[in-house]
Image (cartoon, rainbow, N blue to C red; front, top):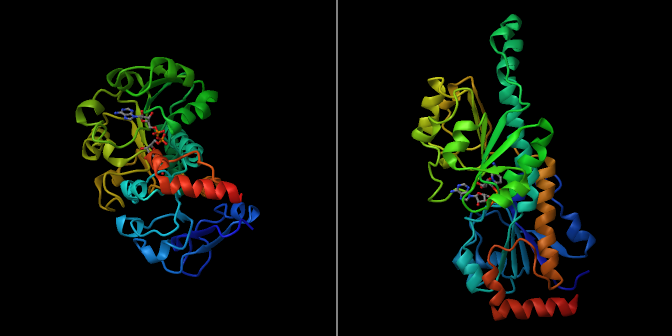
Amino acid sequence: MRQGFRVGVTRDFLKPDGTSGFGDIGLGLLDSAGVAWEYLAENTPELRAGQVRDFDGLLVLGPRVGAAALDDCGRLTIIARFGVGFDSVDVDACTRNGVLLTITPDAVRRPVAAAALTLLLALSHKLLIKDRLTRAGRWAEKLDYMGQGVTGRTLGLIGLGNIGRDVINLARALELRFLAFDPYISSEQASAAGAERVDLETLLRESDYVSVNCNLTDETYHLLDAERLALMKPTAYLINTARGPIVDQAALTAALRAGRLAGAGLDVFEQEPVDPDDPILTLDNVIVAPHGICWTDECFRGNGLSACQSILDVAAGRVPRYVVNRAALEHPRLQRRLRDLATRA
Ligand SMILES: NC(=O)c1ccc[n+]([C@@H]2O[C@H](COP(=O)([O-])OP(=O)(O)OC[C@H]3O[C@@H](n4cnc5c(N)ncnc54)[C@H](O)[C@@H]3O)[C@@H](O)[C@H]2O)c1
């Protein structure tokens, strides 16, 4: 047993009946290393100081972690966020209190990339339309819904980071040509990932599929507005597994309705949950998912394993790989804690 190192797991990982809502989330990794863990006693939307201060590490899914808990956080040394978003955690308060915050980009990479490709293939093959025909006894109408072969087509990636690069890795076998628009990478980096770096207008004009894989920032809000969507080929498909507000959804709906785009695959929406009366949901050439198309056993186990590995690194006095607030490493309290833990390990 790693003496005295205690991990709290937020209770929202559990269903109301007390069983795991996400299957195996890798907690066995803590068991194998002899690190004690337990679910927090209460499921609260925001963690209170009293819930966190007796733990060295926290594995956190949904609850917010704000300054009130962090400014009185006792022995807390690491918050391992399950997933890549961390807007629910007050990063400045973590840093000022010498608490490390980690995320799990390694675990979402493959599931989201596979999800983008799932949408691409399903759209090309008009999968949902053909599913509906088959169920409705409209077998002969398949002649009206010819699919689009992918070989030799062009896939344009907006954002060539963690996930965008893996989309290319997975899609290589389809013999696509890859274009990328990403202002923060060089042509050499794009080419090493297998893509040609181009400007956004060229990408939109030349692509048969456009996959959105950038972060949502002030700069990317409505990056795909009516004017930019109008640059796309009428035979092209748009896939968004990144964040809804990167695409102007009303403009997308209008373009799809008018036949100025062939279709769209959307895991994310401007407003989530999407309003069931949203007109985009009435369109046949749109495939949608509830911001969860990447939710698989692989995804949840991977997120859990990555988060638990970060906790184990800290329990051994090491700096974990996916730290959000590296500035916290300068904090004397954290430096002292890591030294103590390394000595004990
Ligand atoms: N659907 C889901 O369940 C799900 C799960 C995980 C991540 N995501 C989203 O997927 C997206 C990609 O995640 P990631 O892990 O690859 O992130 P990442 O940070 O590794 O990559 C994002 C890339 O976008 C680029 N970028 C930033 N600003 C840009 C701009 N103005 N134009 C073009 N590119 C720009 C960055 O340079 C970076 O290369 C994010 O929006 C993330 O929130 C969605």
